[in-house]
Length: 167
Image (tube, rainbow, N blue to C red; front, side, top):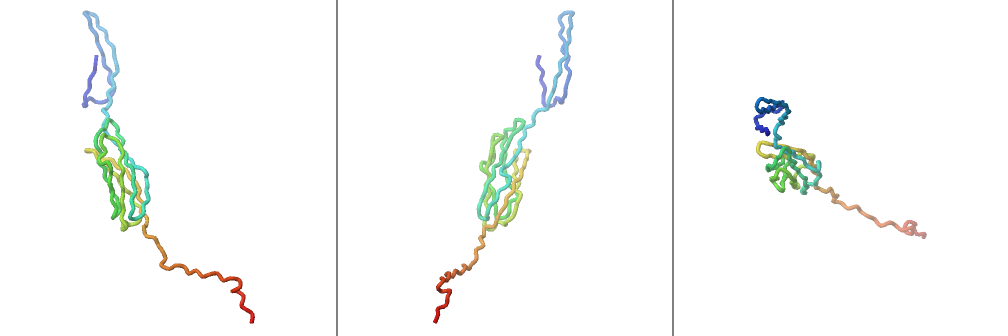
């Protein structure tokens, strides 16, 4: 005996009565049938490290990771938001295919990117599924404050020079 269900079969526990007949003989027994919901394909998105610090005009990177569940095998296209002006982000590879994998998010800044701490949102999209995670970007000043004046160094006087001559 085999039992088949389809996607519209309600989940639950069912008691199934099996009856066997041969001539005037009839025997019955019961079995339990448990119908679970079909696994829904899905994915989660994470990123490491959680925070990076960069100097204006330089770049840094993060790793975005797609982890599948429920048999998910789709392609996930990545994007980033929350970047300060003068900064940009690219992903390689993009999309992540096969339902799982890593992508490097490279963030570049310019000398005019404002200093500060920014929360970047990385979003992964596959059809109607959309997942996101956040990382922190700290932009430090690229300007080195150097005094235009050099300290004046005078030679140390010798001991003899410190004693006035006797006349």
